Image 1 (cartoon, rainbow over the protein chains, first blue to last red):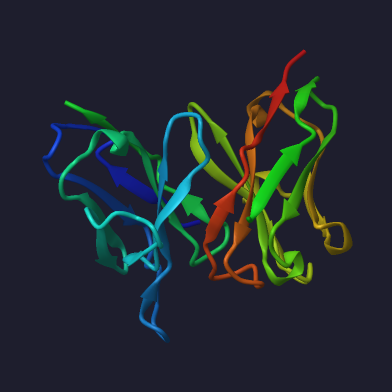
Image 2: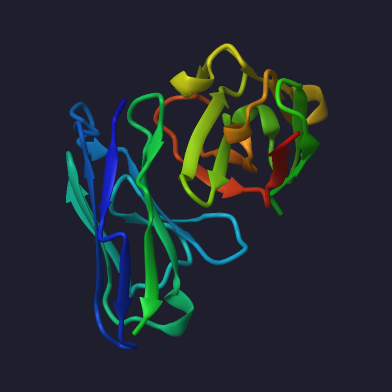
Length: 113
Length: 122
């Protein structure tokens, strides 16, 4: 099984500052034939189901603010919020859909400092 | 509007069975694979099982194989999860989620229901 490891487990950032979350997979999730990494970032606010932020590692879902960015390929991925807003407080998960069983990272809790 | 509504959760004794349902609306159901994902405070999100649009492919997390069975009824726009020999650690919020394509593999989940809670307790 592919193990997804996020860092840090929790993060406190001041409003307007940058927040960075990392995700590492134990095996590549890059499909060489199309050069796409099969990784999604989800945001989960309290009491709500997860919401897609990015898929194929860096393709922004429609409606996601452009202060959110995602990058990476293969085994190493990053989610960045360039200027933290109060509404960004949430749990963030990476998820690989390259190989079954599909797996999530353990989650990163983002709070306001 | 795409909508997924889970039902069937509740309190069940260890060793018993329970079937969860997910009613889908707002999209052509058999054009999309569907998944079950569960969430516990201690373990975060865990993919449980998935099924392709035409039910020709299914997948399970290894630890649940043999106890859980996923199925769908495309005529009823419904997804199911039959859970047997339930254990304390099956206690979780169970989400139904829609994939962005028909095949089980290589598509992420884009729409999630609000979940149904299963509590396994004597």
